[in-house]
Length: 128
Image (cartoon, rainbow, N blue to C red):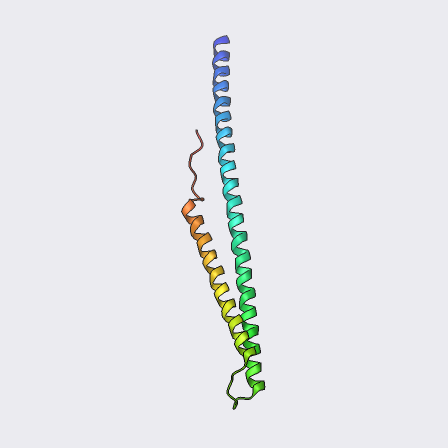
């Protein structure tokens, strides 16, 4: 009886040691996944801000094109268009388009950096 009790205690001790190792490994894995989640959230936040900037720049560009159109109609279609205000609005629209392209390029770079980091792969498996 004492022998089986001792064997049961040893088995229970082994079981708890294994469970301790598994929980420790699980804690490490959880920490790794939390950091990956934090990086992903940061990446998505940066992309979201840049996308918002692109939308604002496109709205600005569209308003400038609308203003250019109004100015052309007001100046009369028969007159030669040599208006510094139109030229100024056109330059601003070009600048908005260039800035929008920069933002889109940044979005692309952030996505590529994330993919290169391999942030969705687990490095170790939990011991069994």
